[in-house]
Amino acid sequence: KSLGNPARMATCPRDRAALRGKHATPTLMCMALVFSVLLSCAQAVPLNRKAQDSGIAGHFREIVVAVKSNAPHLAFEQAFQDTSSLPRSQEHLTLSQICDVFGPSPASVEAVAQWAARFGGHISEKTTCQDFVVVRMPAHQLGNAFLGAEGLVCDEEGGGCNMAAAIPPSIRHAVDFADGIGAPKPAPLSFTRRAAHRDFNPASRRLRQTQHGSEDADKKHKHGPWYPVCLKEASTPPCLKQAYNVSDDAAPSHGSQGVALFGGQFFSPSDLKSFDDKYKLTYKAVHVMNDNKESEPGNEATLDVEYITGMANGELTTTFMHYACTSEDCKPFLHWIMQQANNSDAPLVQSVSVGTTEYEYVEAMGEQYLERINQEFMKAGMRGISLLFATGDKASQIYNHKYWINFPSASPYVTAVGGVWLGELGYGPLSVDPDTTGGVAENEGRN
Image 1 (spheres, one colour):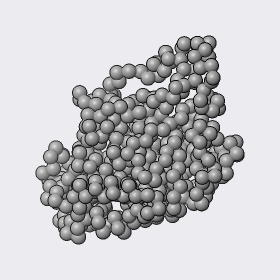
Image 2 (cartoon, one colour; image 1 turned 60 degrees about the vertical axis):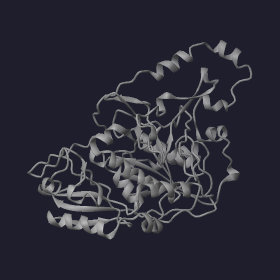
Image 3 (cartoon, rainbow, N blue to C red; image 1 turned 45 degrees about the horizontal axis):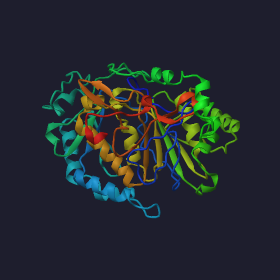
Image 4 (cartoon, rainbow, N blue to C red; image 1 turned 180 degrees about the horizontal axis):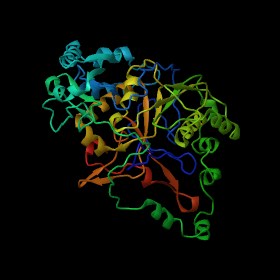
């Protein structure tokens, strides 16, 4: 399912079982995108930025500035690998320790403050580590503040720029990017994207493979399927637990998990209660971070919440994190990233079932933008937070003669979850579904 096409990111709540882990943090066990790792309890501390889609407030812009870390990128890589090898009995880094080791220098934060002041702006918000700051600046000053940024053209009347993010040349030494400078755009639930070429039709392929007839399948599989028969009908939590041998006896005493949804996706507590009653599940209260319009529930959000609570065992805290942004300026989900960077007790397993083809981030934001977001994912891993992203349902896509896969699932610092399907007429074998797997990227480091 996606904030917009070309890739409607995949979950597998009813007709598929899903599991594909990649570069998991040590605290991670995943199933069907919502299987929970049960760790310490979390209490959300929001950074109140729930509804500012494009950073426009009257004649001012609210620009999210990513201040450079005081540590080199290689230090992130080494620390990420070191903490990934920690057993569960040992502590990961706290948010305070992350700030000490990877926070920006005071000089870099001051450089941003001085840059803002030169153009009539000021810093209005900071995250705990001051690695993200929000600059409030007169909209008509954007062209001057970003003067010299390659390829950037800004409206002199304050209507925004032709790019959503850029690096102010005068403080290039201090920042990775500044986001939220794009021209105002409508915020529909789906965007119009450039169509990407597909060389295959997985749905047709599956249909051909299952048209051998039930008689041939029965002869080939005399002993029946290895998995629970219930999976042929529906991937319900009890059936998935049976398929993956999830034991109630192994449940820890407490834990924390969350799902992040965007735009018009809200969940229905009453539907969650009916779901739990139908499948005889223990009802678990869901804490809401930011907002939830119960009267306008979405299927995606409701299913995400139902399955992450339905698959988890034990006493745990589940948090529904909603972010109003649906415009291109919120890529890749900066409000969510900032909120986690400001939360000392963030949910330790977070399921995110949206994403967009990676070339869109590269073209709109630049490679440095992706590198910084990857650093944020590494920080999360060092804190013991496992991030699960849906891989998308179009595998590799060709754009400008290159192969691209979805981001953020393409990041090597998160766990990408795709789908599997049951082969001939449900008898197996269990096969990777090319609809919901990532394929091969042009950049080898992301495969």
